[in-house]
Length: 288
Image (cartoon, rainbow, N blue to C red; front, top):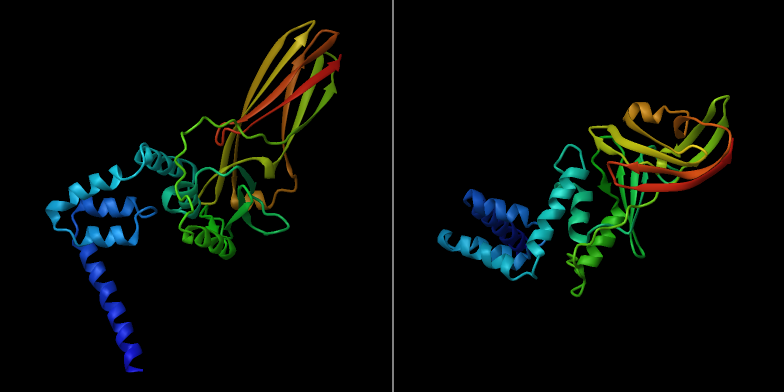
């Protein structure tokens, strides 16, 4: 028993000593340890804390030089993106979604359920990395999506593998906009048609800030035929958590009237989510 207590005491002593060293750091050194929390190794952290103050600036410079070309720039880009996209009670890069994005990069696919689903009754997101599925949940509607226990275990297991690539530094390519689903119907009128568009709410990406879901959709319709037309409509959508939970309608609807002469027409309907940059397009053809 004495041996066990001694080991516990030593562990507490080391922890307190580390805390005291961190507390006494200058602002630049504290900022360095904070910003590199996802990539600095335990050995590097200990080494840095044991340095005399005059050696720390040089160590910080060498820390980034040891990484591949472009590593620092990509790391900071991901932090900036996380702060922009993941709103909530904490800065985006300190949230679970921000952490996963910074370490593993953009997922190959994202499913968003702001109103919940059969799997979870509250807002959640599912990120896919090849064959790996990561789930974030927001049971309290605060915009702070947390990793489920199972997803945390999966990520901890991946990071424990020595050969695992933690920060993907392939050249940053401009990714194609992700598609989302919508349906439309054409309603005939005396002087033209009305394009009725329906988008399932679960297919719409929102920014969430303190329980408020917000996004902006741009709908563009181009028509060719006896008369050529181009119409666009911007739709700003905003719901509180309480409002979206009470929605009886599962679709967001957009109506766009078109004045036309009699004839045959064809064209395209394109919808862009200005927040997530997701894009969807469908061909349209009708006889008026």
